[in-house]
Image (cartoon, rainbow, N blue to C red; front, side, top):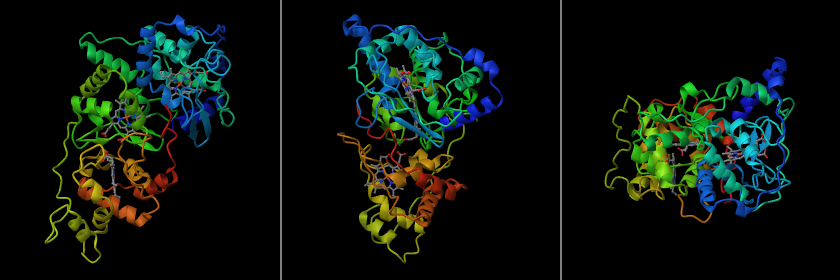
Length: 447
Ligand code: HEC
Ligand code: HEC
Ligand code: HEC
């Protein structure tokens, strides 16, 4: 979605005759260096760089499924074409082996490569620009001490004129200013650390902040909710639709372990984020939670939940017998409830603890959010297995449920289980979710 809008902006800017932008657009090449020896970097600094790279999700975007870590080539599909991440291993020919620290810093802060070309903001330099010199130096030390991999990123498949990188100069002129982090002296050190990371390297807003028509984040509406790879990146802070407000401790646990008892499991594009944070320093993740919690919680609370499912005579509630009794034809129960009892209750009402059991769906933000997008994605695609990890698994019902069944099930979940008015755009959302039910490019990304 980001790129789609960036592309539009490109077309608009070219149409407007971006001659003025051209003057600003020209950036010189920085001289290549001989690849630095691994021993020229301090082990401490390399370790710090490794932690920062986890927080910045570098490997998530710069590694293909089954490919070598940091070797790039991950396809980022868009309706207009495909952009590929680049090789950021220190290979001198196909990676960044000949990049000086100055060139690396310019790329991270200004979105310009060593040769002076503008980079697409699919690379979130609009957040990375906040990173301090010391942290960029550590990241550089970490990357330059990885195994060099010979891997040429495939050429982007973008139509004219958005394949012209100069067009990006206009976008930057309008929407991008490199910033430095200014600590807030009225707050404590963890809060400042958390804010620095959330706004900077962790680029949480890249998904959770809405974007304008030209693909730039609307910073005045930070964390009001955005989109990523066909998933809703739910609003956070005061805009959060979560049934139980997110507390600092819950945020810390969710970000660190990938699930939280009152909120469920991180899914879709959020999953690699928490997998990375699981290995990052615990105090940094706790700092991020502190900052996020300080954004505030929604003023309004939800009404109490309606009783979700009726009792059936002669069988204990939520038992297998109850599920069978509800699901049986001719009981007069609503279609959506019968489908839930038949297809979902055995996992979601079994009381098996998270993360391996299914959560109480009344607590899931995917039922209380403004859009049915994530609920549909989960029901259609399921929760895929993770390589070599004990992780939650849910089957996808994409081929088992037709649109009428899906509509009845979703209406039941939304109105009866979550107690909210039905989504008005459901038929269109079902079509879109079925069309998009292709595996995420990040799913199963190699380490
Ligand atoms: C959301 C995906 C994403 C994340 C996260 C990401 N990158 Fe990238 N990065 C890209 C893409 C896409 C490009 C290529 C942009 C282009 O071709 O214009 C890129 C380009 C780069 C480049 C320029 C390389 C070149 O050869 O031009 C560097 C350096 C880089 N990334 C470093 C990093 C580091 C370090 C991190 C982690 C702190 C990181 N990236 C995280 C998507 C990402
Ligand atoms: C690549 C896009 C992306 C990035 C980057 C990202 N998120 Fe998310 N996030 C999502 C999506 C999509 C969801 C919804 C999926 C889900 O609930 O599992 C989500 C869900 C969440 C939730 C759960 C909200 C709720 O009410 O259920 C929290 C909290 C969250 N993200 C915090 C963060 C923080 C903090 C960061 C930065 C460290 C971050 N996210 C970075 C895409 C992203
Ligand atoms: C085989 C067990 C199983 C079945 C059957 C199953 N699920 Fe799940 N589901 C899971 C597990 C495990 C998770 C991940 C943990 C979690 O978040 O609940 C999950 C996650 C979800 C989530 C995300 C919850 C969140 O916010 O974290 C939704 C929504 C969901 N399932 C809906 C359904 C619906 C609707 C059905 C029936 C059509 C269904 N599930 C059937 C096991 C199952």
